[in-house]
Length: 368
Image (tube, rainbow, N blue to C red; front, top):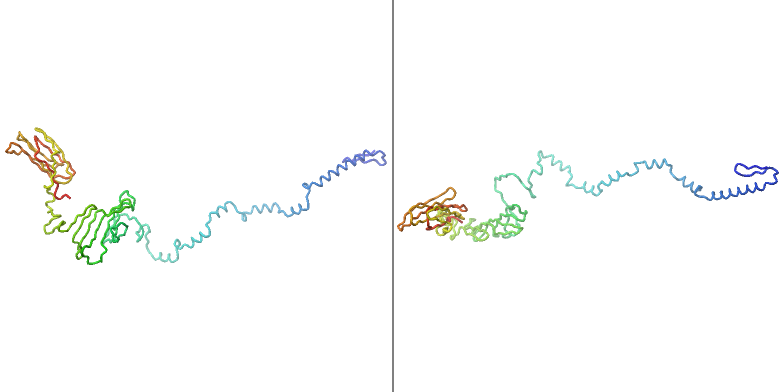
């Protein structure tokens, strides 16, 4: 009787006659094993080829890879990139180092070392450039102002000496200019109808006019002006000519008037102010009048049928009064006059008057 081996193969006994079934099982088992072996052999996924071995043999050891990836000397970090991105371009560095204006040279140092005391640039005035200077400045000598031609002058020979900026206006768009002008005539020995003038010109919204206050000097003889014209932009007043004297030394007059007469009333140009005065018979009444200029007020009141009456003119604490004056026709009058200041109200008080003989305001002769 045969036996079955450990892995299922049947081993017949020596001389065994009926062993077919056992042998058949052996061949069947062997055939299955051969089929499985062929499937196993053909599986290239689980088997290593010579090419695989050659490729693996060419790989680096894991320790070499770890050493490489851990080498911070040969690898770039995020911090390195950020630092390098913040660097200047080579061209910018070259332009900077080559800028002799902003760099100090040995020659500069030598010059500066020779100066014992230096003022800060912000603390000094410069010969050129626009600057604002504070504080009070005292000039002991003449200050020549050359002036500039700013356009819309009287001619190309006109020059602006000073520019006064108007308050709350835009600079260089509104203001006042002090301008000097002389005709384009040969210098020295001026004569004839030469003209020179100083004027205040107006600038408004960048439009400049020559209609401001202007003083013209006319007819120079041996460099001395013989006549003056005062121009206001609307009309001009000739001063110094025989027809319109400014100052006559021989008669001590100004514009034809003696200075002592300037405050006297202009009797040829009186203004009737009787309409401002109200009188009430047998009662006292106060009226008011405000003169526009300096001058005199003269008032005469009347009363019929009574002997007593009065009038008083008062401006501030300055007053003048008049009392009864009997007339042959039975009418009583009283008069008063008062020098008054323009723009200040005058009180006109009547007492027991019932009529107005006259009431006038006379401007002063010296009013202009």
